Length: 192
Image 1: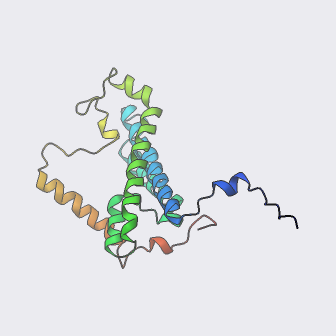
Image 2 (image 1 turned 30 degrees about the horizontal axis):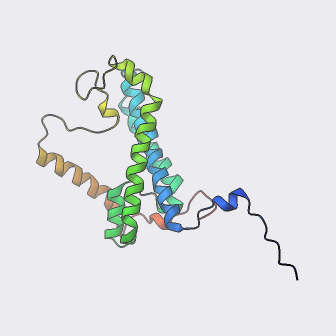
Image 3 (image 1 turned 45 degrees about the horizontal axis):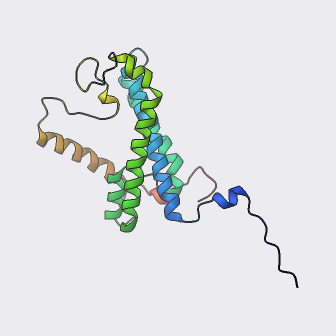
């Protein structure tokens, strides 16, 4: 008897991820990457054009749409957390297992940094010509607010802490035990 010949697997079959944790981790990386590139990209367009090609409305709409796109792209695989605070809240409410948290947070941080580096590369010429080759944090030609938020000079540490926690509470309330059902909503992709 001759041994049965094995079928040669296609490239697609060899590259498919079999581990659900690997799929979820990659999904969170991709979602955070999408959110940073598109969201901070809308900020970069407004800042580097000095308001001629965007302003407060386009920045807010652009960032909101980037979050929506990131959630739609990753929601069916990982729940579309795209934020370590949301992943932590999901663990706290029992919606996600604790052992997944370091993988989600690591993927989200890596996705954010790779997204910011990609955006820096895309807008490199604009950033260098904006302030004569200087990357400034404060002043008229500051570009740091493209990549991060900074408190106003009049804001105390206590009020900044309260502000951020109040906003996070409002967002996490929607993803708590009585809020959104991230892992059970319909997704746009045909596979899970």
